[in-house]
Length: 156
Image (cartoon, rainbow, N blue to C red; front, side):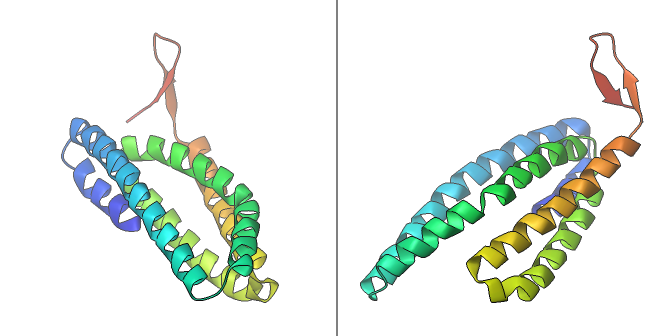
């Protein structure tokens, strides 16, 4: 994802139309890649079952899905607000926030790994909360100017 954000920063130097087109194409690519990730996960589960891990795999998977809820909610917020910055040509800010978030996530995961899978999920949610807070702070600092239709747009 950080690589994609870096590419958006390069595309943003071309023109707004190209950023919008690249954003749409990227979202389509994500949709396709998620389908491949689901096949990969199914293959991993099948392989684990073939190696004899039956009930443990299902229990761990269910626990993981329950623990990932807060992370996924925060991720949705980050992606939505990140799209505003991406469309405004502020991809370099997103890259910095994302890189810092990944580093924080790794450090927290290491520190919370003694809690098992819930600790890893907690690390993911905490790091994403920090990333969302950073984006929210940036959002408040962006100057806006009212437009005739009643919506607000960024100045500059």
